[in-house]
Image 1 (cartoon, rainbow, N blue to C red):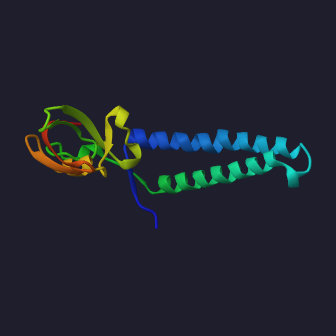
Image 2: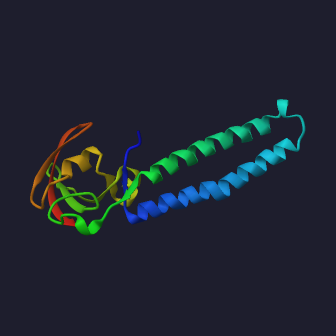
Length: 157
């Protein structure tokens, strides 16, 4: 049974682009490698041929998995989201109560998370702890090192 994955418009476009790259460019490249290895003679002892066929199998598996994700993808309608509390696609500025450090994160679906870009998954411990909170609320979030207390400073889209 496949699960539904939620995407932003940007994330869905990126997924489709990756799938296109795999289907059009990577398939052609591996087919070329197989043909070149086949031209070298005896296939029973041809390590290049075996490696190319294995790469082809892995590529087809990856394509198949991406197609399943894409078939179960749902686009998030930002216009229907409540702007008063932390939800997916919220840009939230939080302050660590213990050390007064502030951080700004955008909560996104798990498959779009990118910590370097300030995007954290709604399924991460911090993401789960912030969901549903409003500006001025405090969130006690269990992380691997213990419990951290954050204050929601600012909320936007």
